[in-house]
Length: 181
Ligand SMILES: CC(C)(COP(=O)(O)OP(=O)(O)OC[C@H]1O[C@@H](n2cnc3c(N)ncnc32)[C@H](O)[C@@H]1OP(=O)(O)O)[C@@H](O)C(=O)NCCC(=O)NCCS
Image 1 (cartoon, rainbow, N blue to C red):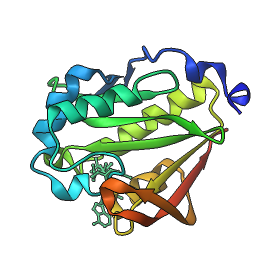
Image 2: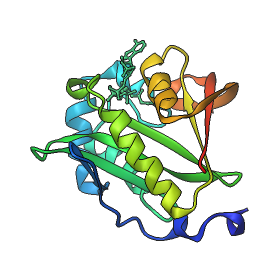
Image 3: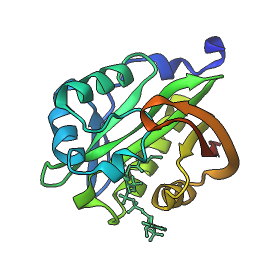
Image 4: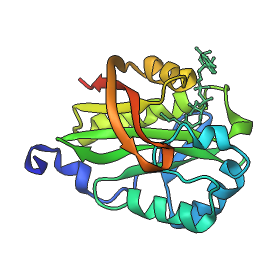
C-alpha cells in the first residue's frame, strides 16, 4: 500500500506553516515539557486522546512525540504570536493508505478557533504533499473535536470499534473522513 502513497508523505517534516495568528513548526522531543505542563492538570482532555497516558510525564510525552515524528509523520507544534506553545496538530501513520489526523490544544487556549486555524494549515499542507484522504476518530461526547472536524470539511462516517488499552480497552469511536481535492 505504501507504494500508492504520495512520496512527499515519507519525506522528513521540515515545513513551517503560518497564518496571521499562529505558526506550526515540526514537533520536537524537547516539546515534551509543554505536554507535561499543559496536559498534566487536564485528565478530561487526555481522556479524549487514544494514546496519551494519564498522569502524563515528560518522559512519556517524549516517547509519544518520537513515535509520531518519524517517516510518514507530519505533526506540528502550534505556537502563537507571543511564542507560546498552544498544543499539537498533525497527520501520519497511514493505515490502509490513509493518514490519520489528530490534535490537542491546551485547556487555557481552547474555544478561540486555534484548532480550526491549525487544522486548515495542516489540511493545506497535506494537499500540497499529495494526500487525497485523511481520517480522524473522536470518542463519544467529544463534541468540540467533532465540531472542529466538521469545520474542516470532514464527514461523519459512523461508529468504529477500537482497542485502546490506555482508554479502557474496547471502545466505540466515531469515524470522520476528509476527501482532499
Ligand atoms: C478538540 C480541541 C482540540 C478543540 O480545540 P479548540 O482550539 O478549542 O477548537 P476551536 O476553538 O477551533 O473550535 C471548537 C469548536 O467546538 C465548539 N465546542 C466547544 N465545546 C463544545 C461542546 N461541549 N459541545 C459542542 N460544541 C463545542 C466551539 O464552540 C467551537 O465551534 P464554533 O467555532 O462553531 O463555535 C480541544 O478541545 C482539545 O484539545 N480537547 C482535548 C483533546 C482532544 O479532544 N483532542 C482531539 C481528539 S479527537
